[in-house]
Image (cartoon, rainbow, N blue to C red; front, side, top):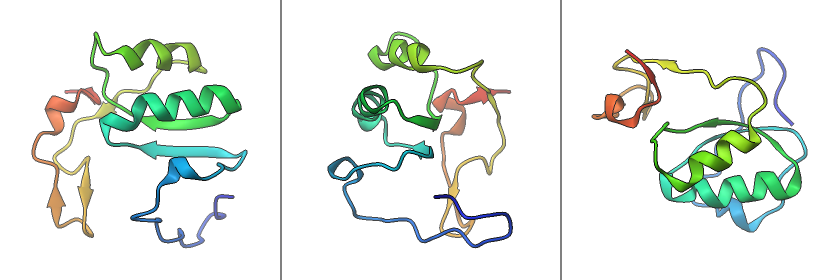
Length: 105
């Protein structure tokens, strides 16, 4: 279950194989390594789950058709900013945000 407004987010389960566990029947969020996209979409489709998925719109990839089948509504392009993808408390920026095709310029 997601925490309520103003609640701190729980620590992310780094180093845990999320595909080896059951997923909650709640709205899920994922920004995955690309290699896990097909496996994640298969699980979402099989279990009838809902997910907010941050994923590149790379035409020609086999998983793009799966995303289109599972869509509820129109995909939202993300605005391209230097700090769109950061980690380590804002200290590490993704060097190739534009190449990920996550949004619009």
